[in-house]
Image (cartoon, rainbow, N blue to C red):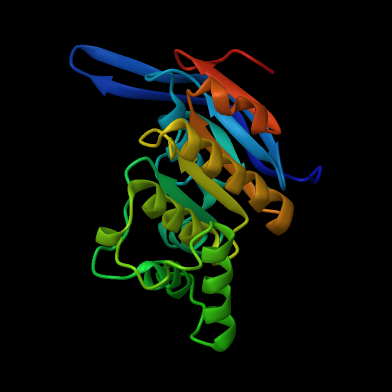
Length: 228
């Protein structure tokens, strides 16, 4: 881990209009995640985890406060700059596996590298193979999503998220649909990413069985941080 913060959340509040008034999803959240950290964003459903992840991932803006990625305030970025940041510097993993059904495992992982502007080469192909081997799917590279289990598809999605060597991976409930054994496997893969690649990972979950793997835990309850 490094002392440099990849993520800095400074007094973030998010208010949504609702019929008859407003709903405050986040209330003055502060947090810093150093480079190379595996951090878990913990909280029950409705605690504000996904709202905060969307703001950190530049998919939404806070009503008040600021978020900095690698020291740069998101609010100063144009939409084009945000899009480039998402493609090149961030990787995303979601609860619902979002592989392209017409592409095999190798091609799905390669796709993220193309989106990041990495040109075709032997090195790119080697990187795809390395990523799939790291998630334990070296022998499934040519299989289509329909030929893989849910756990295998999620591991392909994880390989895709870090193939282009992002600085940050945001994983929103990636283990929610997996059994406890596969959830532990996925969590260990994330831990390995921080060790081998120096990637910063922020993962949301409410599974207390996974907390021991984290370098740090940020816990939310009703839109408020209740630890740290």
